[in-house]
Length: 439
Picture 1 (tube, rainbow, N blue to C red):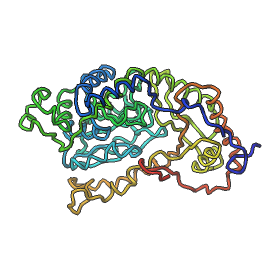
Picture 2 (picture 1 turned 30 degrees about the horizontal axis):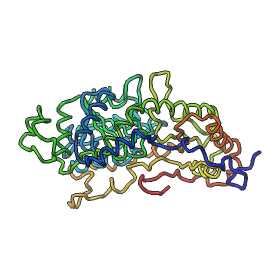
Picture 3 (picture 1 turned 135 degrees about the horizontal axis):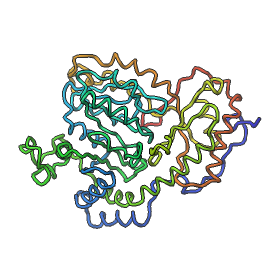
Picture 4 (picture 1 turned 120 degrees about the horizontal axis):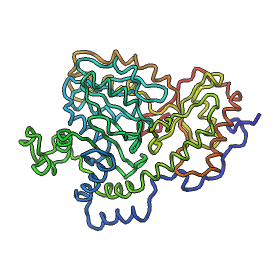
């Protein structure tokens, strides 16, 4: 039996990993030249570079239209406006996701309804129809941690109930589901490209669609300089409101970011293929180990994990004598990798969705325009908190020697986990609200 580092043994990894093993995004002279061009020409607030990127991105994505926004949350807000989300409507979202997937629904006096997740931390189609009511307007599908949601089943349910579908592709740009690119299934897709995503371009959001009306409404929502006759050609109802962003906010992208994005797009697919090679090798090394399962797709189906954003594994404490996932991650951290457990906390547990009064009307804004209190249904999401998970290394290059060392770290903790069984077996899974260090 090998003594674990947490209990005084020697850590698996004490020396620094190669600089390029985890560094992201990959910035080259080409990126720097593109950024300098914007800086020297003072083109931060223009649209010429952004327009080129939008055309290139739409072609790469395989959709007719693309619009760049300041960030992913803004692009998702525009998508909600574009589909006509309004007062009293309900919009379904998985409870385990970043708040920007659905929190802005209150701006439209609409109600977020939370759906359960499955073991892959993805929205559970088996729970979806429970969430549908006569008030349901749309479903937000999140390809969480790059795992493609079950789009066949989801789209069949959406079509049967005549619901709009918004895809949140913030974790999975360029990913495939059965050979078809994520972001091309729903009526509209939106995504973040902030500095830590797999498609990283500083601070940027994108919206894509094939529907001209959705495109024009999204454009008018946050692009005052493009809310005019040059761009709005089919939505006659928007004509009286030209020249002012209809959401009351300026969502135009900074061209320093779209310049970077143009360069990143050229190399993105190749770099993602390298990431997938590395990540699949890592999980193959751990295949069959008790207590852990890779959250990944079977690539033989034509699906893939895109750039494998924020890799996670599913955790099964019953296979490790009830060892809490928090204790497991503590041991991994001591061995040399900063693993944390839980992903983000479930949204239905946050007070924002319980009693926040955005409109100062004395009523929680989540339900202000609804004739039913959806908060009583949140208890149905409890199983989401029982989907134990942990973070894994996110390799950016295939370096067999170093990937083997990280795999050995996880194997060491699993094989010697009985040393850790003094922990409280009833300990709750951790997690965090993104933007904080809370665990």
